Length: 381
Figure 1: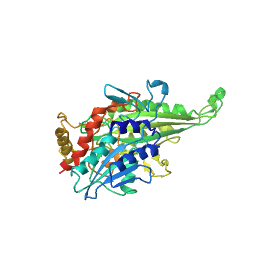
Figure 2: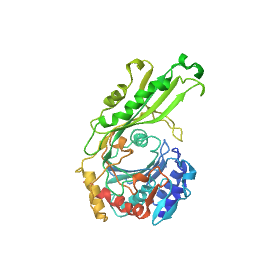
Figure 3: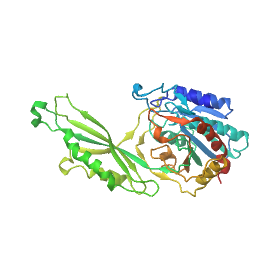
Figure 4: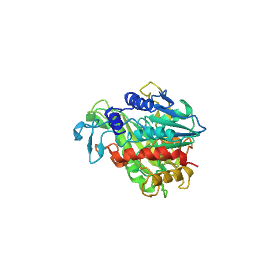
């Protein structure tokens, strides 16, 4: 399993180009005797064991973010390094670490008779591309299966996670009038129109919703693009992008209105707010258009899936601990948020190292997670 983990980390899978790493993952599932192993139309990897009436999906995204500035890394981000039992490599934490345990765990569960009555899927997908779009195709396009339960392998420090905030991605576009910088009084600077909106977003967060489990809503300006004839001209267009993390009790309509209300009255005709829409093709050319609205979700502590997860943790010798939540977003925004499928998270690694040059995972935890994945289905009531 450790060798398998090292090999999948060595295969770059950035920008959602997961074909080569998918082939390596599929080779391992074929070796372990999965009943079905293939790519779906989008290019995700699907492995199936069994034909039972109850359906469970183990979701692990096998794409990663890029490496950024290579000079920031003290080791090869793909070959990585092992130090004190910790593997440091791109994707070690986020999220290739759950793949070996899920695949071997399902094979072991089959061999031990713990999957009787189940159809179990390993779903190695692209999540960094756009949260939730891969499971959306799993349910609605290929293989067109709505699971009864989902386990998400994003890093949880070997705890049970049962939810996270949702998200709405938006942009504000400001139109102006170009002019030579030497005659800027003849122009209408599109950037200046955004300044009160940016300041309003900066000051808005304390006024956002709160929830005892999911926490406080968040908002930030995450990007800005300017269109100008030259650096010696007044820009005639400026765009800011907004990442809005939504907690329970916050609706999409209210969230949009909060930003709309920041646009000064005198700019209403030339400054417009829009929700973002995603329709970029995957590496196979498959297109699945989707709004970039992702609902918050959480299971109750007493939900049978959460309880089964806590029992599984206890049975494999992990210390008792309350269930938690992610700070970042996962495919749970579709599985649980949109499709209403009971979902939990369990995986090795700490999300604080995700997307950093210290992307890392304990190899002991990576192997230990196999036990959890193997016994969980048999404990779900």
